[in-house]
Length: 190
Image (cartoon, rainbow, N blue to C red):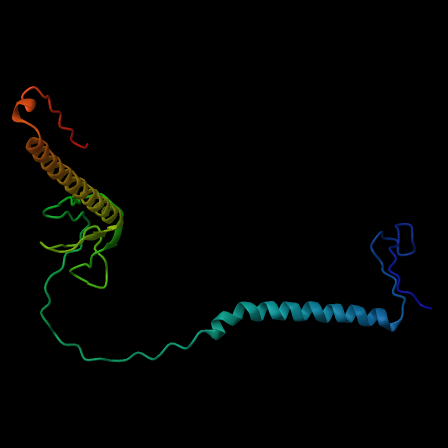
């Protein structure tokens, strides 16, 4: 069985030099392997060269220039400048009531967008809708308190009317001289 050997000869060898002197011994499979490696390196180098050339090859060709007629026109002068644009009048807007904002009103310049900082608004524009649930609960509580107070008033009026009826009845049953010395206390419900 033949083997592939690479042997380095020393200075004192027959070639007299100390140079690397390979001795090639071996069968065809080793030679084929080396040949395959050399071909692989060559293909890798060719592929790398193609890769760097590829972006230029894939770019679309530039269209030929098109000639057009030029017409003379009067254009207004323009000025390019840097600066800060400040509004003529800036107004702070606030609500008379507190609450969570449910939604913003439409922008008068573009109704598909909501009102935003810097939007131009006009008198009567709806800027925001405040969630009415808190105030609705307060209204319902106040209406319930009013109904309770009206019921208490009706009860007090009924008690007063009953007391008047009983007072007249007591006066008709007794002699008037008995009431001169009687002390009367009227109780009102609270």
